[in-house]
Length: 181
Image 1: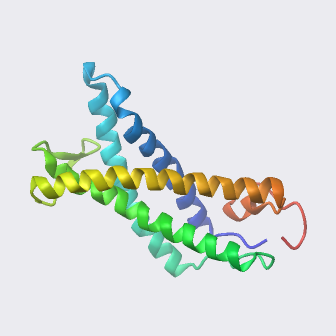
Image 2: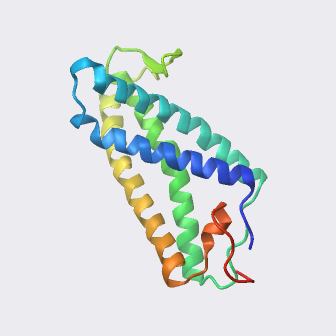
């Protein structure tokens, strides 16, 4: 079984946890009480992890260029290959665009953009109309990321339960069930 490199596997799972957590924080922050600074804490973490995701996405892109992924299994149809390539391309695009639009929308207010309370991150200096547009795009991209994750999970279920090809091994989980897969 062709596996992804250790670096690719670590980046995949680390970013998966961060992205899912950030989506939860973004979609659910309105339900977090404002008393006691709880919502501010959630949004501060959301912004800090968003900035981290930008950096890790760039590292991941560099890693992928330097360490090409394994070939698709020989039994993949041309349609499966096309869907996999489109899905991965979509993820890379949204992994960068979603947090970048969040960064741009930070110009909607005068509060500093803090990175885990360690340092303030410079803003883009755009006017409020651009920042407001970035906010709309940020929300839309959040839904796009959620859709990509759902499709990714559906593909996982298809491969694990229907095809029984155990592709999770390629991402560092489990051991191969049959030779030649």
